[in-house]
View (cartoon, rainbow, N blue to C red):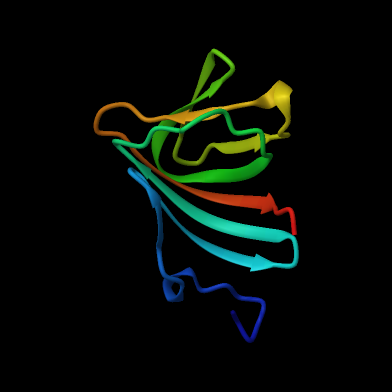
Length: 108
């Protein structure tokens, strides 16, 4: 929580969400900002159908869009509409690590 419009992610604790992934989140209403760190060992358990918009802050990784892989590196912007047509999962190769800033709409 913040007393101004500035979000200080340094003051937010990391949440471990599984092997090779952790994040920090700021939620206001149905909007969420997350810094997500993916590292070697992360394996998406299934297809993600949610929408995401964001930027790669560090590193590089791939996203598998239903069999077609796109590569993303530092500075790249990402926009995924969500839904079955844009189902996706992250792919990290040996030694890869990526940190993303994501803007998301939550269910509630």
